[in-house]
Image 1 (cartoon, helix red, strand yellow):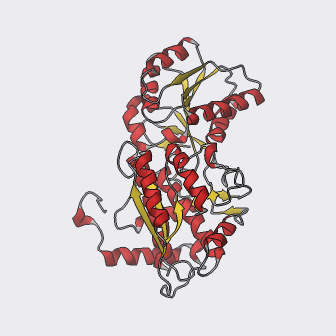
Image 2 (image 1 turned 90 degrees about the horizontal axis):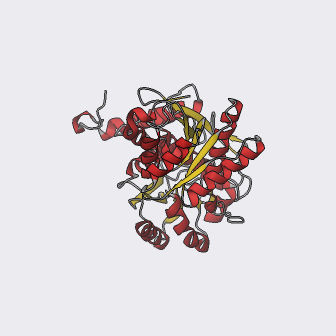
Image 3 (image 1 turned 135 degrees about the vertical axis):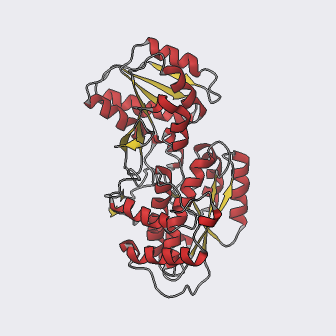
Length: 390
């Protein structure tokens, strides 16, 4: 078995290439790829993401998942003879660094598109430059409505929105007959969108108004929010928090109301967060925007496992790595539809032709820039061993 921590256990470049080629041959979605060597230079796409810093584990997982899909395509000669080169720059989840990265990408005449740039604050800051330039802005990593810009055809969102995740949680609770739902949300754009989605879902389900509390970005009032909601005697709490505010709230709330069901969004559903919460995470329900990455019965997950096994450095099959892989798969399909030597305009047109596309357990249906192309949301539960269960 390969140990990614031990350089001596990693496969040689030749062995890694053989694995990639074998995996490519085995994957039916690459049936269209040319076997010939690429005749044109590589098609370069660029990504600003967090590879270090507080959310470095998220950005790294998505980046590696995408690399796995592109590596398999490249092993078959690329897309219509063009290899795909993914250049990633680390922004550490910091807005100034993200903007500097985007300026560098936009100044690079070889940069064809921006791919899977990460984080709601960073995406919000990037958007004016993206909209002005017209460059394809493919699969930004945010569920925020701010990236669903009316008429902005160069911005293509895939992942379900935060409001849709909140709605799924409320619908599930209503089905279980739970009526007293409290909501804690971050005092920023992200949190307010989660609350708005939950509120609309509760109105449709004819549930009582939620008792609410907000938490600041520095988590300084997480304890006070936990005490307020604990005193309201809820049957369940929907957590519209991310990062430190989420962790501090859960740690403060659990000892006060041990048996209350906690529901959170996908931004909390990382192995690092689950590990940080320890026993407090057990039993939490977390919405996810891609299938369970360990369920190889799902065809797209099975393809994902074949692809990551071929990587020179193995990675864990996480939700985030699978999301990066899926985003790359969709990009590859759009690039194929754009034809040989595609222009940016042809690629953008191709993205909006992705209607009723089934990757094998994950559907893409592009409609308008105001809507994300995926509506996939499912609930998972954190088991006693910290693993996600469906």
